Length: 334
Ligand code: TRP
Image (tube, rainbow, N blue to C red; front, side):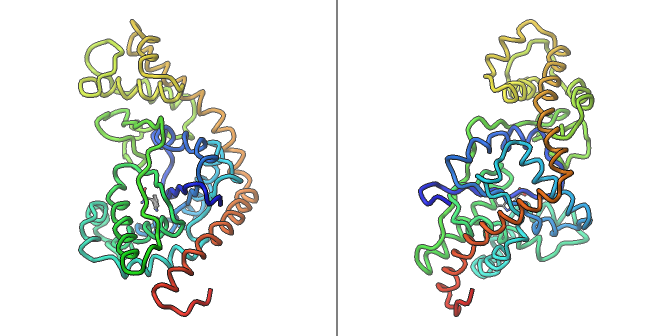
């Protein structure tokens, strides 16, 4: 790790598939950060246990996530791509931070309230302390910047409060992390209900494009995408959310501006535009998919990356933990 560079940490749950929204909103731009920052991308398997998982599927999805990251161009020698459960420091720091987090704070987390309603039969302790483990993920690496969507802002705010509280008691220990929105990241909305974010957990599969969707499925989903009344291809988020979303997708996948898109499709019909968007997306994803299917077959290679990067993460995590143990008054023996 280069001490002159700022550190970025991002956690991704291996609990579902990656969508075009995740790709254009984050992943596509991650590759551009690898030279400027120290980047950690962590598969947060421990977080997924807060809701019941099928063990075999969880393991497979963890490999899939790594394979996709590699396929999207993240260099495993320049980014620390690792599994949360491989570095015991996450759980250890989480315990300590939990003692500096108030029940009242955790009760206010909207995700906890949502999830306890959705999984009313399993409102477990982990669901409640989820944000503490997330704070540990971030603070363990003295992270400066955390790429997150709005749904995670409240959790990041809590991590900042915990860091400041600890620093106030024991002196400068943790870096207080900031949210980070990579340049050119696009917010991609659902294809059927463009007022809401494209989400992998949506029950209607026509709402999202998966990075692994085959070409014919991609084109079919775009053909079905809702558009708005009128017939012009112009950007107007408020009155034409459907077309505006498609313009964003086309601009982002081709690295051009919205104005360029509008110029290119001036006078075109909605139907033709939708097919053009679908074709563009399918051809941009084709090389990623090809690499993904190669990587996912090679578990030996994926394991070697996990092993090597776990070691790097462990080394850095241990430095922070040692400091924390000393400050709180443990006899350090690590
Ligand atoms: N809670 C995040 C989510 O569901 C995942 C996550 C866990 C995370 N630890 C993190 C994100 C640390 C950023 C930093 O999206």
